[in-house]
Image 1 (cartoon, helix red, strand yellow):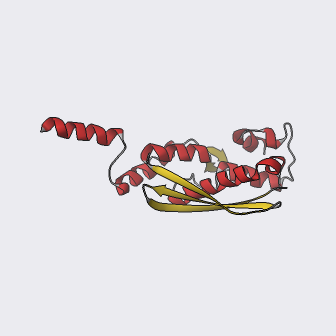
Image 2 (cartoon, helix red, strand yellow):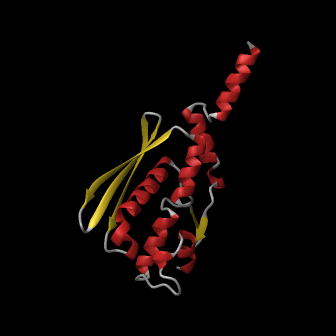
Image 3 (tube, rainbow, N blue to C red):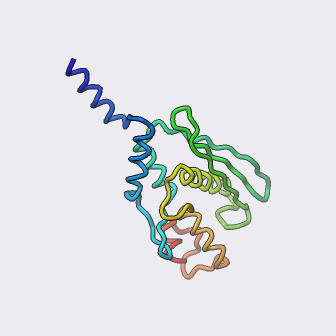
Length: 165
């Protein structure tokens, strides 16, 4: 009998199981372990890092992506975060196809990444700000009229983009 309870405990630890409430509390309490970038005194984390962090606590996570609208000028997407069968958060995003060199060919991909980032933020996974590092880089680029000192911003990583701006 004792051996069965030890096996159950090991299974519970290995699978990250426990009540949703306990796992979410632990996830949010440890959010400070997600790598961030300090931009103008505020902390921003990338969508990829926040998604990777979520999966540590909720390996049963499912992300549903939907194209709400698209034409030759813009794309709008919606992302829903499910844990098990229950939806817990939703994020929306819009990208204009002519807003950058990358968006000319990858507006849909950028839009899906943005809506995932907004969805994760709605679940509570964000730095000191709701926006992701990628969203801030895009906003700063638009404010600077796309001017970059060295490499074109479209060819930079998110970290390099933010440092350049």
